[in-house]
Image (tube, rainbow over all chains, first blue to last red; front, side):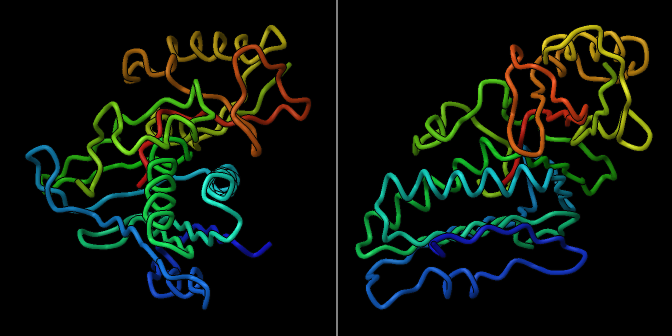
Amino acid sequence: MGHHFVHVADRANEVLDPAAALEFVSDPGFGGVTMFVGRVRDLNQGREVAGISYDLYRPLALARFGEIAEQAQREFGPALKLYIAHALGRLAVGELAVVIAAGTPHRDEAFRACRLAIEAVKHSAPIWKQEHYVDGDSVWSEGCSLCDAPAVHAATSPAPAHDHDDPQR
Amino acid sequence: MDIELELFGALRDLEAGDRLRLPVPGETVADLREALTVYATGHWPRIAAGLLKSCAFATADSVLRDSAPLPADGHMVVLPPVSGG
């Protein structure tokens, strides 16, 4: 259909490209385009962060991104264009971890589709984050169990029931 | 049957090569979970308490519930709780 684009960007070869995301979801019929960009933050729970390594199971992650896009399409209509890309590998503070963009005829669906997609990616895609601290220590984040996934439905809530030590908060 | 497991996230730190071949005395994902728990008790002293209980088992296509049969090709991945974004 060409209405969604999903991608994993290995930091060894490329960086995430918000301009490409905006371009993909643009359309003469769309009055609303939204984008979420997740960046590596310099502080988490009081600890100075030097960087983050993302581990990822590529085939299942891409399949999951595709399912998320299909779910969003069902919820917000066939016109929706959605772009989902996540980084793999070691990122420094300020680098981009995830880029989500949504384009729709009107703004409300664009905001909601973008929110649905980022929450679903965070809670249900097979991606793992290891934080590297300035003091030399490294810790894998605790995360969200997939045992009771599929989690797209649970992930549509705008306010997660639990907190994550994610880099964007 | 023997299951070839690929490990991700925190589990990578526990097993050299991030892979493990494990004989499973049974035919379901629950049997695999039990076999891996026994293996972890003997080989992974540094594993976080309770981590395996919250791990999911999957193929390249989908996450499998504990009641699901093991895949015929014997290849599975172990997915700790996820933390993308």
